[in-house]
Image (tube, rainbow, N blue to C red; front, side):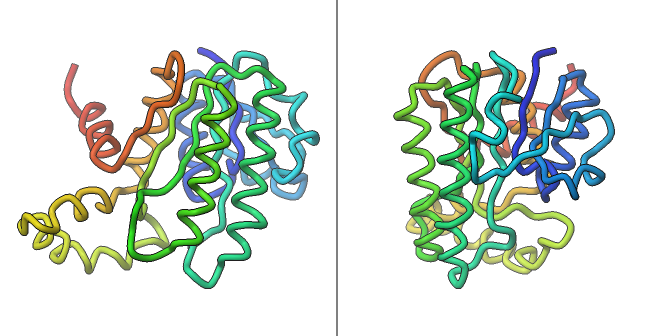
Length: 222
């Protein structure tokens, strides 16, 4: 299996994703601060560096690797606009520069579904990240969830009946599908599939329906 370099590997999506990558036979290197090495799943090689400074880790990225960028502000909400600019935007700028320097084969970025009536600053920053990736010329996959349900992220379950109603009404059906809820397992399955089937050139986008389809494909018996 090929090498994978992960930023944000000790986070909400990063930890279960790395565990699955290692179990699937990938050689995983994960960027982390020295104090967080112990939070990485077993089998991953820790790379000490700063996610906001691409020069601190670019030489540790294996040439031809798949780069998965997961750094982001936890529990985003409209009050965190400054963090979106200072962390989310700066980290994707650093990641694209480092990945380009290392000549990675495939870049995977977790963005966000859009357009949406809320979280304008968050969406604006993620759109800038998508633009950076496209302009870099790297083969890339952009994954666009809206809200990822899982441990500590369960309150939107109360919205499921509302989503069902919105999907039933023709005028709101497209909105409900585009901003649908996905689970942590859905995201891990999608990212694993993206790593296993890299985009050969250009940029591939996986929206909520594609995320759900990826999980169903993995559940389907061979």
